[in-house]
Amino acid sequence: MTLAAVLPQLITEWSLTSTEAGWLGGIYFAGYVASVPVLTALTDRVDPKRIVVISALVAGMASIAFAFFAEGFWVALMLRFLAGSGLGGTYMPGLKALTDQLPKEVRSRGVTYYTGVFALGTAFSFLIGGEVAGAFGWRWAFAAAGLGCFVGTTIIVAVLPASGTSPSSAPVLAAFGQVLRNRQALGYMISYFGYAWEMFAFRVWIVAFLFFSQMYNAVSVDIMTATVWATIFAFAGVAANMAFGELAIAFNQRRVLIGVSVISLLAGAGVGYMSGESYGVVICLCLVFAMLTSGRNAPTNAGLVAAAPEHLRGTAMALHATIGYAGGILGPLAAGIALDAAGGIESAGGWTAAFLAIAVGAIISALALLCLNRRGD
Image 1: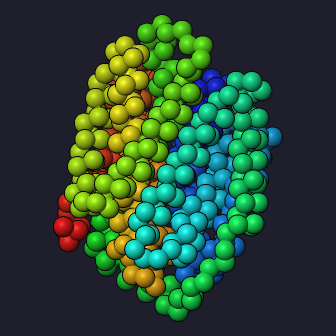
Image 2: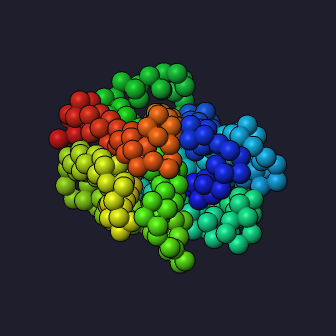
Image 3: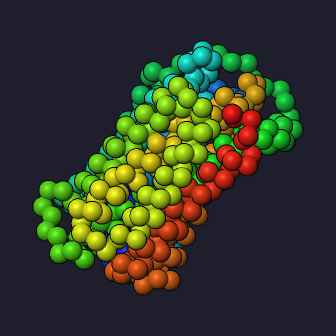
C-alpha cells in the first residue's frame, strides 16, 4: 500500500489522469496474477519456503528500484508489476507453508491469524509510507518498503520450517481441471475476486478520496492526515478479519460471507452518495466500509482451504489467488475510469461514481456464493 499512501503526490508530479493512477494501483495485482498460478501450484511439488524467500527478494529489489529509477508512468508501471510478481510468490505460498504445518482441525484459525497479520502489514505500509514520504519524499517511502521485504526474508530463512508433506504426482493441467470442477471451491474463488476488487480499489483510492474530502470541506489537518486515517481503517480491518473469521468458524461460513457482502454493498454505495457530506460523516462511513471489506478475507480463504482436496491444496490456492487477485487489477482501474467519466478527483459526483464501481465487488462475492456454493449450507 506504499503507492496508495503517495498516490496524490505522484498524480501531481507526473500529471497522471485518474485512469493512469488506477493502472498504477492495479498493475501490482497484475504482477501477482501473472506469477501466482505458477509459483503457488509449485508448492505441491517444491518446498514453499524456497519460493517465498526468492519471491520476497524480488519484491524488495523492485521497490528499491522504484525509489531510484521511477521517473514517470511507464517505468513505474513496469516496476510495480515486478513487485506484484514478488507478492505472488510470498502470500499464498506462505499460507501453504503455514497450513502444511498445522493439523486439519485448526487450519481455519491459522488462516484467520495469517490473513490478519498480512492486513497489519498493509496497515503499517500506509502509515510508514505516508510518514516517510512526508519527512523525506516519496522515493524514501519505497526504499523503506523494500527494506521491509529484506527483513521479512531474514525472518523466513531463520524461522520457517521446511515442508514435511510429500510432493504431488498429479499432472499439472489435470490438477487444475480437478480443482475447477469443484463447485464449492470455485464459489469461494469467484467470491475472492469480488473481495479483492472491492478491498484493493478502496485501499488504492482512499488517500486520494480523503484529500478530496478535506479540501471540499476546508478541513485543516495536522495530526490525523489522510494516510493516518487510512492506517486506522486498515487496523479496523484487521480486527474485523479476525472477528468474521471466528464468526464463520462458529456459524455457517457461506451465510456469514453472503450477509457481510450484502451489508458491504450498502456501505460502499453509502460512502459514494455521501461523498460530499461533512468530513466526519465520510470518516465514519469509510471506517464501516473498511471493516466489511477486509473482514471477508479470512473466511473466504478458510472456505477455500476446507473445500480443496488435500493433495491439491497448493493448486487450489494458486487458482484461488489468480482468480481472486484479478479483481485487484480491475477494481482500482474501474474506480479510476468512473472518476474520469463523472467529473474527476475534485468532483463529489466523480467520487460517487468511483465508490459505486468499487461496491460492484460485493455483488460479485454474494452472487458467487449464492449460485455456485449451495452445498456450503
